[in-house]
Length: 391
Ligand code: FNR
Image (spheres, rainbow, N blue to C red):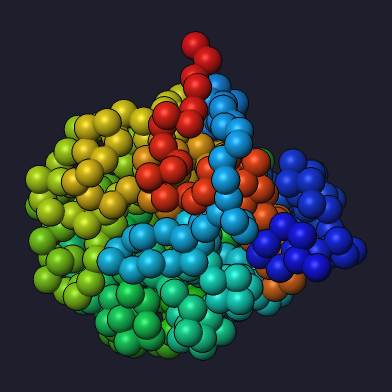
C-alpha cells in the first residue's frame, strides 16, 4: 500500500529516509574536489549556517479535529500553471562530477516525480540532451548573464532554451563572479576551468560561441579545450554586474516569464515590481557566494510583507526536509527550490537517488501538513497563521 502518498511504501529504499544523513553519506562517496565543491561555502560558511538555522526558529503549530479525506494536496500555482508539487530542482552546474549520468539522471528523475527541472548555464550536458531526458516534464532555463559585448551569445542560449521547451527564464544575479570558496581554493579546484569540458557543455555546443572562438583564435574549440574553457568561464562570469536597465534586453529576446534569482533585499524586490518582472527567487545561493549575509528565510519574510502579492515568489537556501518546505510556503513562497539534497541523491544513486530524495521530501511535506491539520499546501490553509516564531 502507498502509506504516505507520492509512491512511498514500506520497502527497502536505495538509501536512508533520514534526510539529515544524506550529506554525510554522500561525503563518503565523493572525491575530495567534488565534496569541496558541493558542500563548500563562501568564506566561513556563516551565511549557509544561518540559512539552515533560520528554519528552526519557526514552528508549525498543529491543529486537531480537522476533518480530512485523503492526503493534503501539495499542488502549486506558479507562472500561470497548476503544478503537481510545490518544489523544483534548483539549477546546479557540473552535475557529471557527482554521477556520470549527471544532468540526464536528475532531469529524468524530476520528470518522473512531476518536479520542474531548472537547467544551469554551467551544466556539463548539452541543453538539447537534457530536454530529451526530461521528456514532457516542466523545465526552466537558468542564465548566467554574459556581458553586453556577448549579447549574440546570450541570444543564442535563449533561443536554444526556447526551442527545446524551457518555458521560463531564471536569471541568476548573485554570481557574476564565483564566491570566495576556501574548499575549492584549497583543492585548487575550479570545475569551470577544466579542459574536459565539465561546466562548459552549453558553451562548447553553442554555434555562436564556437564561431566567435574560431574567429578570435583561428581554430576549433576541440583544438584548445583549455583556452576555450577559460573563455567560456569569462563569458558567463564576466566579473561585473549588469544594471537594472539591462533587463529590457532580456525581455526583448525572451518570450516568456522572467524570474530574477538571488534577491535578498526589499529594495531590490520593489525594483522588480516596478519593472514588471514576473517573479523572483529569494536566495543567497546557499551561502556559496557572499558570506556574512542574512538567512534567506528571514529575507523571505520581509520581502513577502513588502511585495508578496505583486509578483511570483520562489525561495531557496537551507531547505533540508519536508517541514522546511512547509515553513517557506507558509511564509509566502509559492514554490521552493531544492539544492544540495538532490545533489546528494545524485551522488548516492543517480536517477533513482534523485527520485528517492524528491519522493522523501514530498512524503515528509505531505505528512507534515496532514498531521498538522492542514488540508492543502495552498495559501488558504498553509499561511503565517500556522506558524510561531521564537525570538
Ligand atoms: C548551486 N547553485 C547554482 N545556482 C545557479 O543559479 N546556477 C548554478 O549553476 C548553480 N550551481 C550550483 C552548484 C552547487 C554544487 C550548489 C550546491 C548550488 C545554487 C542553487 O541553485 C541554490 O540556490 C542553492 O543550492 C540553495 O542552497 P542549498 O539549499 O543547497 O543550501
